[in-house]
Image 1: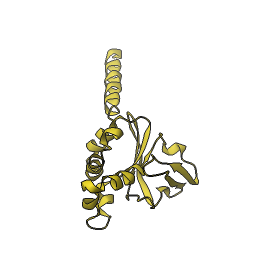
Image 2: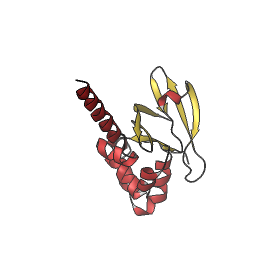
Image 3: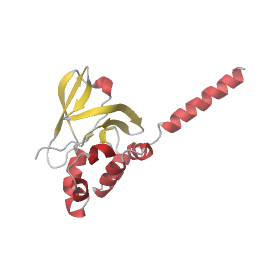
Image 4: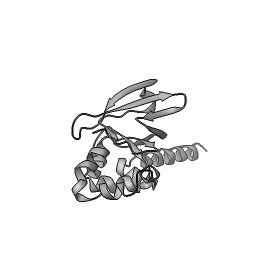
Length: 161
């Protein structure tokens, strides 16, 4: 009986380790709801950085979030000549540190994103109705990867010019 419990415990630990061993890009690809985000990261030349960077937080818009943008916006951003603009938008969704939901303060506070064309900050509000980041709502928090954390958001955040 003890051997059976020990074997089951070992199998559980191994499956848990394997499940959390994916990086941010692999985790997003596996979810199946971030196809546009992955395509945008590849077009902007950021997919490798998201896969190999350490201690990142990504506020990841779903495919539905990208679909809310005006018609033609995504297609336009994916053009090679708009690579810098696309990179700036995507980097606005990434923090250079891990920020779990239990580390978020009540009320509004600001966090610095990865630099693109200048310093950018996100306004995060944690309240009874949940967490908002700029004007996006976090719909699923704290997806742990081997190189950071993903928080799923319902809108694409556009940095002010």
